[in-house]
Image (tube, rainbow, N blue to C red):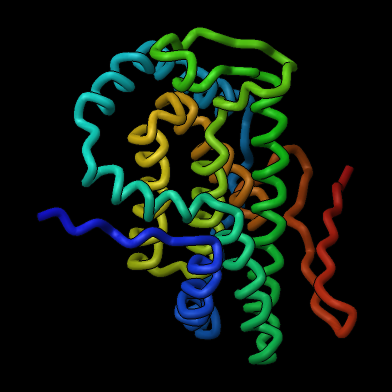
Amino acid sequence: MRVPFPSLSSAGCVLALTLVVPALAGPLAGQMPARAQAVSVQWWHAAVAVGGVATLMLVDEPVARFMQDRRSNDTNDVASVVRHMGNYPFYISAAAGTVAVGLVSGDSRITRAGGRLAAALALTGTLTRLGKFGAGRERPIPSGLDSDQYHPFSTGYTSLPSGHTSMAFALATSLSDEIERPWATVALYTGAGLVGWSRLNDNRHWLSDVAAGAMIGIFSAKLVNGRWRVFNLRPPGVKAGSQGIEVAWNVAF
């Protein structure tokens, strides 16, 4: 007899985060280790990333067949749970919950961490939407297993990059950089990786879509957290006051 995994609704995600966010915010309230010097992103870093995604496109169809041949009720049950980490009720609640914990506790470090998380998610969402519109790639469904169907700058073709994956990796990277604990890094990136796997299991994305989404999420979070620099773009400043949260992004010339 098969016992199915419980399905998480949007309301369930929000309720779960009311328990998860305080647990994640706990280490943020402790002594924060010194941050490493920011890494300057060079043009060849972008070239390697694009080349990697392009290489994965060569195996998109075999990987899709492999995943669908091994798809089962059990894998569908797991996917139905883990994919919620890439759904907007989950990551919006994570950002809002972290800010709320900071405001209630009076700890400005936690509040600023929530503001940076929100900024990272916003940047990820913007880059993901631009990528989808520019690529115009068809999903595995209903196009079957033909991975070479593109309609650049057209609406309705939203396979590349994977939005669930990009948001999950932005969330994982942002929180991992803030908490800076090995256990948190392993847990967060494992969860994000499972979100990417779920998109392949559900036949909603190609492998290269998932890889591109992961790169966008990591890049956005590292940029917002100040771990990576592009040109002279500095990390945004986050200010919490009685009027709410203010996020300001300055560019030095």
